Length: 318
Ligand code: AVJ
Image 1 (cartoon, helix red, strand yellow):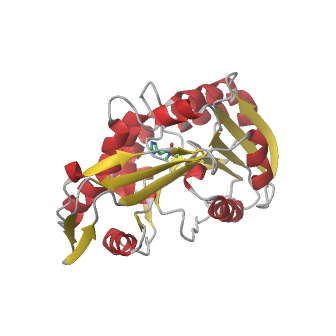
Image 2 (image 1 turned 135 degrees about the vertical axis):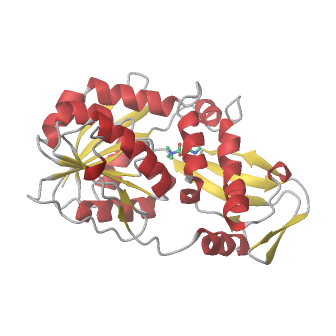
């Protein structure tokens, strides 16, 4: 049986820094921090997929409904025969709507977790036998060079999930500029979570089933698995307040007591109540996002939102 595996040549790009080095560097700082990109090993990617199904986490279902409702219009903007380049592709669920509607020639998903990308891309390959699939294991926060395909099809970027919100505005603009360059004249479809009732935002990051807490603590369990460290996940509390002045959810792991952890032979001390910052999730208004995007080389064009204005999808032209 042809599963299409012959079409899958995963491109591995050097990640430039190791989890061990980045973890130690962040934990030596005051205040302590761990970059949110390290959430996404195979386990973390799977826990994130469970977050997407939570009743409190309105983002995924709202964005998926927007994609489905406006698929024909989006497909027309992307143009037939394009190469869709997805940044931080994750489970590859949302892109299926675009693959159906836009009939691209090729799909290039970028993701930081090579093991997870390999898994999900196999399933997609079986479902889309005519599609050129080119998985790229890459950290898109680092310089990216996506080699051109034969025939040099026009590129259309896809950056859903409000992952842009995980960057501070300056870093978000720098990232959009680099995407603008990587797309070589193609447009970008980007999903952006919107400012709303703080209680609704708070609930989305403090779900009743504790899945977000598990996602946050997976950082420490990942360190234990990969680096042999001795974090006690019960020794830390998930804390995710909404900072209304900054317009962002902030996520922390807070030490419940005085404790020390040994990572790669180095001892790190935690004071009682000491926070480790693990993520920011910035929220925008439709206008504030368009203003920011307009300063990155893109021209904000179409925008779609749901009746409750929970989430937005933006088409940025090059
Ligand atoms: C990766 C941006 C989609 O910030 O909402 C979910 C990650 N963190 N719950 C977000 C996340 C906690 C998420 N995105």
